[in-house]
Amino acid sequence: MLRARALLLALAAAVVLAGSANAADLTASLTKGTPELKSAGPMAFGPEGILFVGDTSAATIFAIATEDTTAAKTFDKVKLEGVNEKIANSLGVEAKALAINDMAANPISGNIYFSVSRGTGNDAKPVIVRIDPKGKISEFMLKDVKFSKVALSNPVGEGRNRREAITQIAFVKDRVYVAGLSNEEFASKLRSIPFPFKDADKGASIEIWHTAHGKTETASPVRTFVAWDFKGETNLLAAYTCTPLVRIPVTSLKPGEMVKGQTVAELGNMNRPLDMITYTKDGKDFILLTNSARGVMKIPLEGLDKIEALNDKPVRGGGTAGQKFEKVESLKDVQQLDKYGKDHAIVLVGKQGGALTLETIDLP
Image 1 (spheres, rainbow, N blue to C red):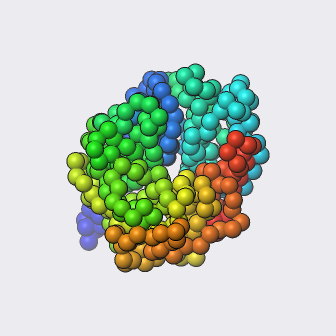
Image 2: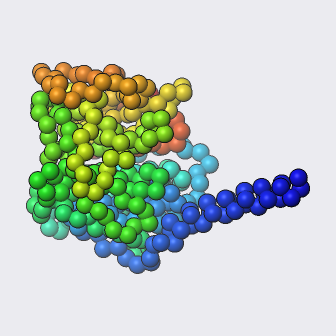
Image 3: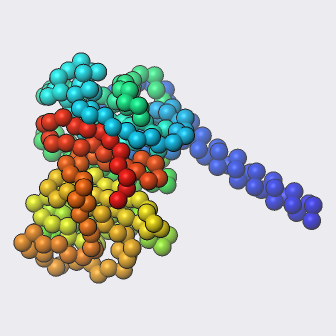
């Protein structure tokens, strides 16, 4: 029995050491240098303080070790008014010469990161900005950092549409999922890229039934998505303009495949989804989705795996259908949001072109 117990302890220690090695391997795969970003767009945090940044101009995903790995004791309330003006001032430009492209909260430290464009037109430069919970603003310097990158094959061509080469990224388990457009006939793509990076395959083409338009579409990009497990199987829940919500199992995302997503909700037309998160409250799982024209929606995930797909069923006149949801009337003009600790979200609030406020909210 003593020998068996010793063997079990040895196996347990080996598992712990293997887990530690795997975590360490994520940053060990990165090389010290200066990532030459042409643009800074969608972002997402992975483990070990690794920040994934989508460079839409170069159609490239960068993995950058922030070394921001000191765990926050608590996730304090944050409120910083005129945050876009304060960021612009810290970078030496006027607020009108600054564009905030995305926001991501570090789940370890509670620091909030912004990808921004400093300047306008051809003179615009990509910058990553970090704001701590007390409101201190600093530029995250991209010199002598550990990083790696992977280029996307067949991105949508140069010009206005190039910013849609990458519309959303997320790290899930051991992969980086990337939504965007390609230059192929069936342009809408979802790519499943193993991390540490090697190469990015051509991705899967995504076909959806667009309920408000009453037709099948293959060129409309996913605007934002989250991952959620249905009975142990990971699915992406993707939101599109005008506003179908679509379920896509990640096991179907094979290179070169044409995948038909299951439209599980129509959330209303004349609208663009901006950002979404998942969270748990009172033992139940929800999506929190913010939109350009239809406010913030709280969508229960319970029963979403059983709901009948709306495929081939048009929804006219701005109506809604499928999975039920409620509008969170207390939240207005939310441009960005991210999970912030267990019970809160961090939101960027305000009208386009005006002063923006960064603040925490209780999850509804």
